[in-house]
Every structure is written in structure tokens, then in C-alpha cells.
Length: 86
Image (tube, rainbow, N blue to C red; front, side):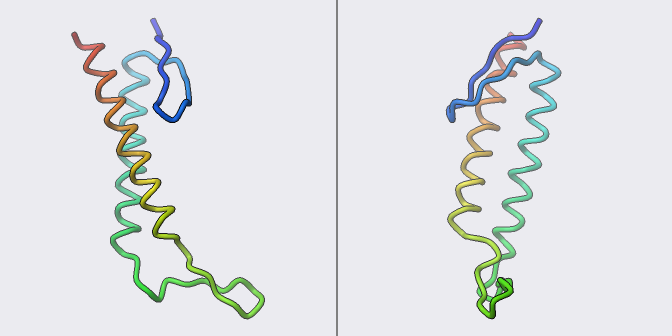
């Protein structure tokens, strides 16, 4: 039987234990990927905009925000999985 869950961000969904485990793995992967990108950023990570100017390819703030988002989601999902296993 599926239950309804809501992330702190407000996003709601229905899931059973298997769905939560898959979602946990997916969110851990996202978190790891953003952590890898963040750790490899250097000052010369720029990309041309096509008009002669360059912008940062990645925003530090954006990546940090994504890492916080997925770390929070992992924590929430782990808590929900623990509830299922009681």
C-alpha cells in the first residue's frame, strides 16, 4: 500500500517502501553528482555565450543550493524508510 509523502519543499507524491528506496538511491546519486561538480570547479570554468562575452558555466550558489536540497531530501527519505521498517 502506498502512502502520501511531502518534502519540506512542498513537493508531494505517493510511494511504498520500494519506491522510497529507489527514490533514495536517485537522490543520493544527484547529491554525489553535484558534490563532484562543486569539488571540480575552478575559476576558469567559463562558457562562451556566443556574443563575445563569457559567463560562469556553473554558479557556486546554484550548486550549493542543489546540494542542500538533495541532502535534505536524502535525510527525509531515510526517515520515511525507517518508519516503514518499524
